[in-house]
Amino acid sequence: MKKARWGTLLLAGVLAVTGAFGSTGEKQVDAASAISASVRKVSAGGKSFTVQTVSIPKGTKSAIGLAQGKVGQTQSFASIVKNSGATAAINGAFFNSYGGPADPYGTLISKGQIVHTGYYGTSIGFKADGSVLMDSLRAKITGSVTTKPDASGRTRTQSWYATFVNRTPDSGQDVVLLYNPARGANVGFQGGMAVTVRKGKVVKKEANANAAIPSDGYVLVYYGSEKRNAERFAVGSTVETNIAYANADGKDIPWVDVVTSVGAGPRLLKDGKISLDAKGEGFNDPKILTGSGARSGIAIMPDGSVLLATVNGATMKQWAQVMQKLGAKQAMNLDGGASSALYANGRTLTGAGRPLSNTLVFGEWVSMQ
Image (cartoon, rainbow, N blue to C red; front, side):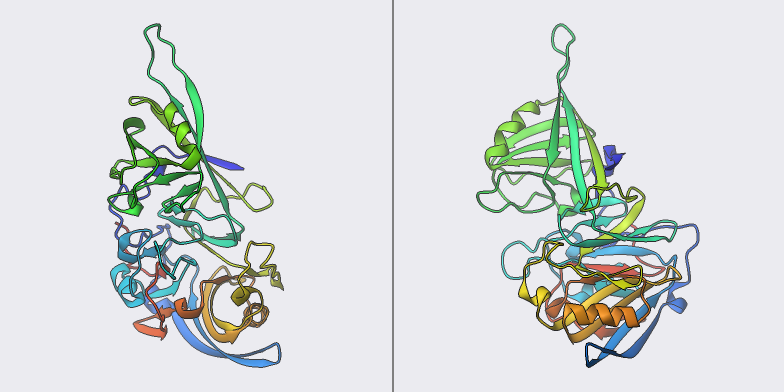
């Protein structure tokens, strides 16, 4: 796995999270004039489809638009777009839209910081240099904790790991959760043992508390049977954190320099060929496996530009065929159904049927604060 030392990298919102962070490259395009929308007629699987498309030139700044500027909230698509200052936008990762916390399911990276983790599907990643990646991203978070020296000057170092980032645990789960400022002011629930880390030092431990998330640190919550492992975090101990990026096959992938990423899926195209294995990517919902419905998707074109697209009434196989006929080199599905939404140049091309958790936004004026 490709590893990177986090240190302050874990502070996925140490700078105020306002809902969208821009990816800055040396060469940025004039998004307002270069981003273009069009309606395409495509035949696939014996059916004709009307496809709304938006072309994003290579090098356009990208960002994650979070509902209300936080992970686990919802907001109207129009409000997220307005708050982000986007020239173009599309809905992003699947999320819990049927009651309970509106946590995303996929991995989200904003301004180079992981703000949510998921362990299924396919992700698209944007680097600051304008290059775009697509792979089955799996992020592994580990670290070490070292006690203060004892009377004889000896210290003890132990390892630790986090199962999820900024996610609400289910009742009965045995997990370790990491919460950074992208979650908001507090972790959002009471339970487990919370360990608060500021500037690499353990400053507090509290049980069954809706712990406050520091602006210069994070909170680890040890939940269920994992609670006993919080004992290694004595107040005053030094904490280090690492992240490793690999794909579903365990192969290292160059995600360290990715500044914006959304995880959804399944993959539709790989190198211009249909590459669809929804079950293999962890999907089991008939809406994905066999059903037809409203779809959103994103593709990398042969010239390095990006294509956003939405369509109605397509099966996943038909959706892959549509993307292929649109000339995509790499393509993946995004959340769909009532979440399907697309915007460009001041116009809503596809309207969402419900409030959304997260979006992928593009443009010269996307917020970087």
